Length: 169
Image (cartoon, rainbow, N blue to C red; front, side, top):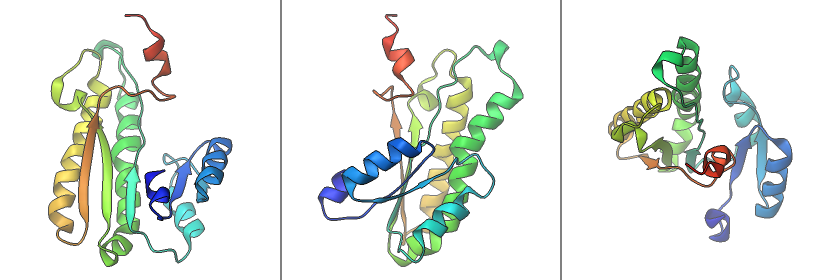
């Protein structure tokens, strides 16, 4: 909302077409409906963007998969790494030339759990710690043409967090 209020343009990406369409209408922006866990999801985004220059990328996906390690499976970790890290690298790889040409920036998202160590957070904390490692590596690799930053949030008031926020613990 801040970008569009300042005269910039945004292209939204998400899985829920109705929510995206509503927000895109509010922001007078374009959007792509896709799932970043699908193979080659970036093809659809870049096709929808066409020749539009890319000045910035905010990769704002996340998950809340909390359980004791005894209850985890390899697939829990693989899905979290695919969502948080691997798909981020795909869209970054595909947009890096445009970002470099436009002296753009990348913003990734982590969690305070990656550094603090919270009970039952081994799945998300390890995936987001990998995102932090990616951020540091890409900041060095892309400097001085592309800025790369990572924001490590705590629990936020979002749809995905509603079940936790409603809990009176």
